[in-house]
Length: 480
Ligand code: FAD
Image (cartoon, rainbow, N blue to C red):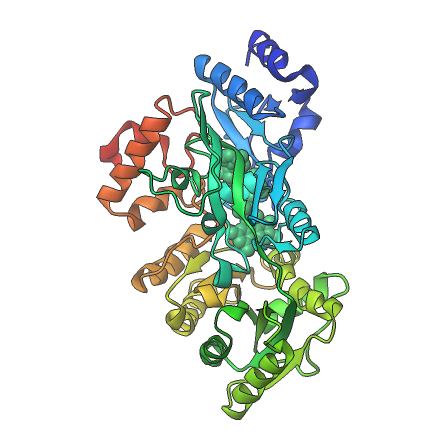
């Protein structure tokens, strides 16, 4: 990148907001697990929608590829530049204002760089709930959540990020501003364009602000950990609890004993939830809005009914907020602690909820057959049919040699997923990690439509190139 162009960017957003020193740029070029690395010579940090628009106009004119980045917690490499050093990172971190929070209308208008946890806290202070909740909430940003269509632990009751959006403000690849920042609950005026940008992984536009739904804050929450023998029992427990609690069940997470062991070993201040170890655990959260419902009585009756039916071996009900938080920390810790056990090969899959036990049986057996001694650690959002089917390396194995088998193992696991009418990416997206596999799970018409939309909005192919759709696929449809 020539000095003259960098000088133009500096003029637009200020020299201090254009990072060019290697040490300043480094954190934007790698993700936390060190799985994806990029190379770049410039990171731009605009502070307003107008500045984003100016930056995009200049980049479009000069044919410079832009990679939008939020909190850099994405798991599929979509927020990282390639290694050419020609691409520029556009960080949204300075667009961090909550523009308005209207508790009466249950709407918050927030900028893309607002950290998810900041919005959760602001909603809480206004006696409201912003329900998106995930392990990375202390660092991921609303723009990243929207672009990845994040899921997390509350999808069961509130849906994923797409379901929480009323309107968007987006800067298009050529710098034009699409102002769709409406706050209406009903608006059937033609194509609903906002949905194009949600889950697009920054390939169609740069989201600068969003109008988001808030909910009444639950009056009471009950969190419990139930011990079960196997995923079949977990499924029956899910059906029973769903039947009893309906929409009041806001979380149903599955955890294997090995994941609990890893978290106890590597996490700080984590305690074994029950005295005796059990092969599997279900974390259940109930959120009660009505004074007329006694949440404690409800979760106790779920336990009693399940125990009598032989669907649960033991359980612990949180006696305090601290204990409820500890149960959630145990679950959330599972995403992060696996790296302390060496390499892990991850799959973010979904299948119909009723197929989870069969999927786990097949996938665990197939993993062990493909790499003897490997340690499957499947956990996650069972109530949504979404399991993080992560596999840790065999004890004492060489990390790099194990990770070199990623494609071998993924081909087998994804084969089972496809066979069971599931998805190879339930909530993390496609990025570069699964880009080349995408044509195998979309039909030709769907791929053609995706390519057509990308070409319409980004005819020069400058916004987050080679993510989701490969540059080759865009150049030449027949290569698919
Ligand atoms: P980034 O990683 O910076 O970017 C993600 C994508 O969005 C990239 O394609 C990037 O180009 C694009 N992007 C970012 N900002 C913008 C913008 N303003 N406009 C346009 N494009 C943009 N995900 C889940 O869904 N559920 C989980 O339960 C979950 N748990 C996680 C737990 C941990 C410990 C970690 C590390 C990650 C987890 N994730 C989970 C993945 C990740 O946190 C989410 O995908 C999150 O939504 C990404 O937000 P981010 O701000 O970090 O985005």
